[in-house]
Length: 262
Image 1: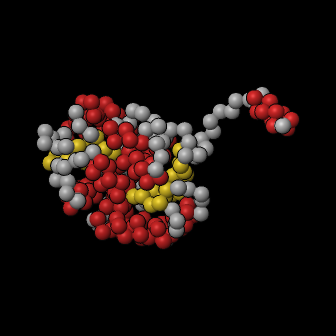
Image 2: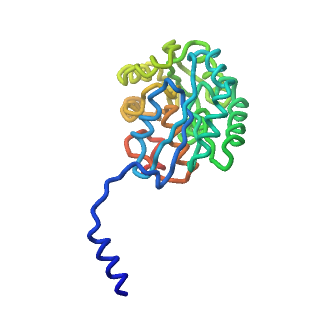
Image 3: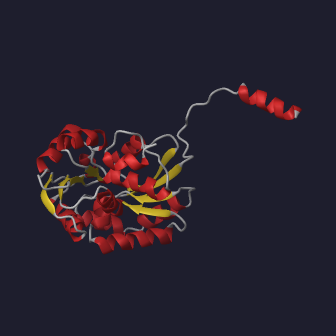
């Protein structure tokens, strides 16, 4: 009894510690492009206390069909997945949208199976799988599409969405092929791009690319358009939390996040 009293007294006089970013709720492992910077910062911005993000990077030569294929066929991908899978993470997320939809739905499914093999025992998520799950969650049908991609990659985004039942009623792309330049597009420009592609019959707007800013403007875009606006980064983070079974998002990042907001 005396020892319990002493322990209680010591606990009562213990100093207050600050939150240090520990992933006590969920640890998200992220495979991300070496030259990209947006997805990590937006995920941290959306993450509530108790959710942490841990990254392994792979090299993307150029944001073209050929450059993405080179990245996906390089041995670095397997090495990154195995390294990340060795950490005590709850979910492994492949943070490349175009890289996972490049050759359609079957290609994305095959990527998921490879990641399961390379990181056994981890829950697996890709940006493209997360996108489809997010569109289902907001009950989207026909959509509008905004991307920063070159034409060849943009057209594959349209094909992927339409083969999964989402007719793309209006779309626009910025034609950027350098990864570092994707992150330099301002939130004001993204906001204007999204408003320009909206269509009265579109049930949602999708913003593709995980090195393209949007999180800080999602709520403003939804208010302006009166419909869900889904970004690839937001969808990826939401889906990681969903399959981890935790409410680990801060408020203010779009209607999609309501069910996982802490």
